Image (cartoon, rainbow, N blue to C red):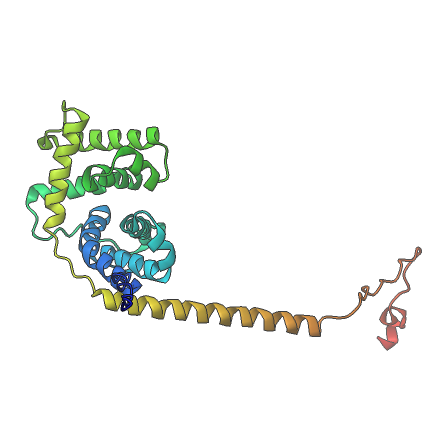
Length: 267
């Protein structure tokens, strides 16, 4: 009786390899960059600043990719960095122009002007809640405020827009309806803006160069500080040398100078 040959076990099903960081980053950039530029434009009214802020945020995300990849919301991480950069105080010292809303109707331009007149904290809260569509809790977390504080900013921002632009139809509406109306109007204004963002590969390359330059500059600065410290240590005296003492003052009349002791004939 012949023995049966054992068949080898079947090969395990191939497991799809996880996509590389470059692939994931490029998808994130391609999916969200345009929308983030439009959102940041609404915050600032300055197209170039909005573009720079978003590109800078994606470059920083690539430099810190392990941290960003582990974040539950990588797009939210990039958005927060872009908003922070766009609203940084030092941008106020640059020459400002009138808000450039291309392709917008007069009503949309009036909305942008009124929106930009709001305090920065109001703008950011209103944009996140009514423009992006985040909930109140998520909005408060992103602006680093309590939920009551975020709700207060949202309410006051809507009230100011209702007073500034009665044609929006916000007055007398419920908060939910106000949010819906503003979401539509802000979305139309943002969608009308032309967006030009570098390709994801370009963003990654520039981000890597910036990181290398920053690292090199930090190393160079540390070397200069170390050299200056060494020079100071080598040239400094090794012990304390007290200053010379002044002669003690003596009592009594001072001797007359030599010129005063001469006779009148010799002067």
